[in-house]
Length: 354
Ligand code: NAP
Ligand code: ZN
Image 1: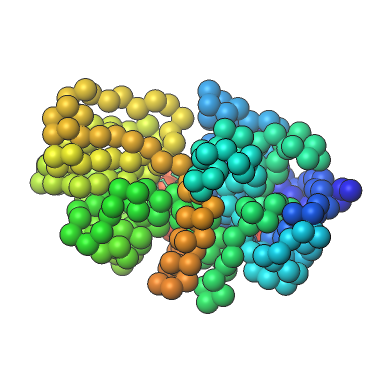
Image 2: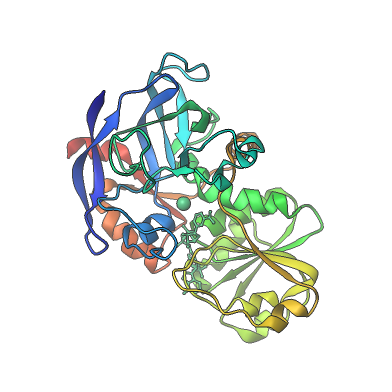
C-alpha cells in the first residue's frame, strides 16, 4: 500500500530543488511513519544533489535529500514496540541494513555491506527506485533505525545531531578524546561546530582551524580554547608537534599535510569531510612521528542513541539558522561560501503551503 507525500527534489545534477510529490509505503509490521517537523541541510546533501561523489556512489534522479530528520510519529506497524503515535522521533543517515552480519551485530550498521542510506540507496520495498530523504512531509522507516529524542531540547537544534552530531561524536569517542588531550577541529561549519561542542564537553583543550577569521568569536563561544586562521603560516607553525588528535571536517580539497605536521608522536587525524577530489599526502607527513590518518563515517544506531542521550543530559544542540523550504537553493549557495552559522535547518511546516 502506497501513499503520496510532498517533497523537494532535484531532477539532475544541475537542477535546483523544486516542489514535487513522491510515493511512500504505508507502514509495514516493523515500520514507523513520522511527520517531519525539521530537517537539517548537510553538505552531503549538496555533494549528492550535484553528483560530486559519482566515483563512489553516483546519484539516481530525482533525488530527495535530507538525513537530519526530527518529527512526530503518526502511525506504527503491528509489530512496533518502541514507538506510538504522538512520540517525538528522529531518523539519521540510514534506514535499513541486513541486521545480522557481524558489523550490524556489533552496532556498526553504517559499515554493513547492505546498508540502506536514507536517500539515494536502492529501495528494497520497491516503492520507488531509490530511498527518498527528509525534505518531505513524512517518512517511513524500520523502527530499528528510528531514534528517541530527548524531550528537553529545542527540536530544530536537534535535527543536525542526526548527522553532524554523530559524525563528530563517534570519532572523538573512538580516539579517546578526554580531559588533558589537545584536539584540533578543522573547518567551522555544521560538522565542525558540533565537533567543538563535543570535544569541549569531553574536557579536551580545543583548537579550531578556520579559513574564516570572522568566525573567531563564535568559535570561542562554542567551546574552543584557541582559534587559528589556517592561512596564516606563522600561527600554524606555533602548533607543530603538539596535537593528540585532529578532526578534519573540510568539504573541499585542501592541504592535509599542513595538519599532519601538527600531530605529536603517534597522533591521529581523522577525516570526516568528504571532498569531491582526492587529497595529496606526502609520505613524510606520516613517517615522521609515526602519525596516522584515518576516516570515520557517521555512527551506528546504538552510538547515535548514546549521543542523543548525552546531548539531552548536557543540553547540547546545534546552532541553527531555520529556513523555509522555499529558500533551500539559496541555503546551498551560502553553504558553498562557508556562510552558515552553523547549520541550516528546514522548518518543514513551510512545505504544507506548496
Ligand atoms: P559545511 O557546513 O559546509 O562545513 C565545511 C567547512 O569547511 C566550512 O564551513 C569551512 O570552514 C571549511 N571549508 C570549506 N571549503 C574549504 C576550503 N576550500 N578550504 C578550507 N576549508 C574549507 O559542511 P558540513 O555539512 O559540516 O560537511 C563537511 C564535510 O563532511 C562534507 O564534505 C560532507 O559531505 C562531509 N560529511 C561526512 C560525513 C561522514 O560520515 N564522514 C557525514 C556528514 C558530512 P571555515 O569557514 O571555518 O574554514
Ligand atoms: Zn550529513
